[in-house]
Length: 215
Image 1: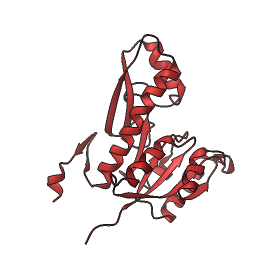
Image 2: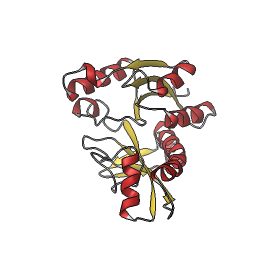
Image 3: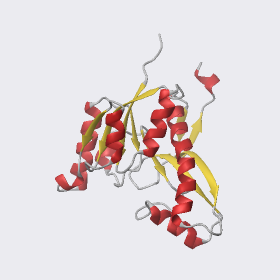
């Protein structure tokens, strides 16, 4: 008897292009999963429209409606659990989670960050701020990182990284565009491996199991 596709929930604040990359990989059969819920933290997030166009359930849960970050996180966790989500994706979600959310999905929540962790990450490093810091530092390589989510921002075990060169005439915009191309490859790959049961966390290291070990 074949197993059911993994139920995926997405938290997004913006356009949802990384979510779209995962949806495309699901559509062509690369990922044995199904997005069952997309939560935006503001009504205007285009990720919600992408989801509606694909007939995926959506919800808006705004931090402005809660007195504390903990209560906001608890509301997110409750909504994901109500949809029986097995894997939660933070795809451009502009909110640092608290224990109320991370404890609800230990080893089952994934984030993508537009730099090579452990560099240029943590509180304050988001969006173009990351690429501005990369250019100011003079490093020659940047990229993106997909990692499991833990309580401290961008601190969880790393699943996939992809690198891009930093060019002498780069601006934050041109570097961001080059990194985004790799994000659209890295996140679906990490989700594919998770849904295939091929990720094992051993301390700070994520081991990718050969498919043969699962047979």
